[in-house]
Image 1 (tube, rainbow, N blue to C red):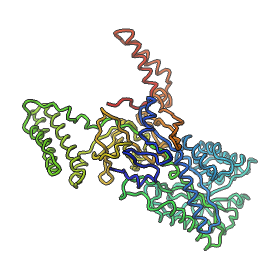
Image 2 (image 1 turned 120 degrees about the vertical axis):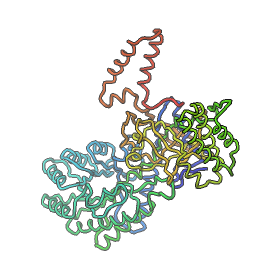
Image 3 (image 1 turned 30 degrees about the vertical axis):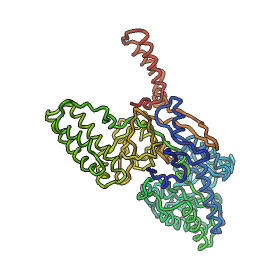
Length: 609
């Protein structure tokens, strides 16, 4: 039985039981059961299942670990956290974050005017709001309005020009002045594909010289009392704890020096995000070398040591970990539409009374396969296939012969894989790369897991059932977009094996895990495939409830969203169809009804084979 690395990436959120993947919580429903129940509504296409209890679990873990570290290290500062809205702004995710985080005074972080408006509306009074990213006068003024409402808001400046905006707005209006944060540009660099978020060439933050200039500007304008926080961000998905320790030492010393320079109301260090999520399904490619416990211990201990050495009071610690909070709560379910070797089944074989000698030899190899001979005979079959293709190209065998050869070779490959599963050999593993199966999934990689396409970010993938049956087919996944990049290729170093399924007899679903961070907000409507259908699953002791069901946009809505007049398009199409010739009025009416029905359905494929 393959476990698909669930012990590596799963965090005990899911489990395998009786051949199915189940949610490891309360009544433990299977994902297959949930999926089938949703599909009874006639839904087709991909489906996002949201599990808000997993957001609550992550928030609990974040606060409990930092509070434990603070207690164990005799740290006198407090811990605070905000969720960066850029990671997932969808209402179902944000509402779950606010609900589960309220008892901790968990706040929100905004990086645009729209996100700031959302943070101001959703954050409970008393919970922190931080504002990052580039700003103009209007965005700064929105921050002043939030402070006027009573929000605990900190506007983090990314450059001296933004500080000038804050000073100008403070002097020109009577609104309450928010707290001011300064993002520092550290020399220390991160690691991995997001390392460019840090270092001297980073996009954001003030250099040492600019920090001193900012202090002078605040003093000259009698606003130094509002300087509350320094902020840094080493990069998303921080893989090594050593990176964190290095930047903490630099940032901690900057904080202590600013305090000594007269920043008396400076009370907080915001360490940004970067707390990594494990996406790997294979031990050899783990993506982080630390636990949440080690992360929190390192942050608290290092800041304490620096402040004690400098004689500075321990600051409050802020984090902006978003990926860690929401990645696990969302699971993408994609139906498999086709296996590209589906037609190579024995029932499709149409042998002649007199077959070419090589085909007869293939028949014999197929009948004589055994665990001892499977490798040898598979080599012979592949060699025969090349010879038969040459004969076909030279006109010596016909198309039926070629079809029979392809089916027989495929049958030999399948039998060989089954016969060798208890004693896997390196040769089989090498041949798997050549003999891999292509699974067509009813989903768009560009829409639902764009980080795979853009960054080659891996995601855990596994079938919903058959997990008590050996999975022997080396699998590549093809999506339904008209783009050859819409493929998750088989990688020998991180192989994905799936089952050999007859889709005429049963459905087969794949689940993509840890897709709750960034994928929805970054998803693009390539080929006009839009956001999948989705629902929220609330699990209790005896079962579960399905809430917030939203089907993917229908075809007319998709076109309207990009600027077309849907009613005009529909009228145009119906008029063109109505003006064509039909055998009967009944046929014409039926066809027009079908046209309208199809355009009011979602844009994903609705039928299997």
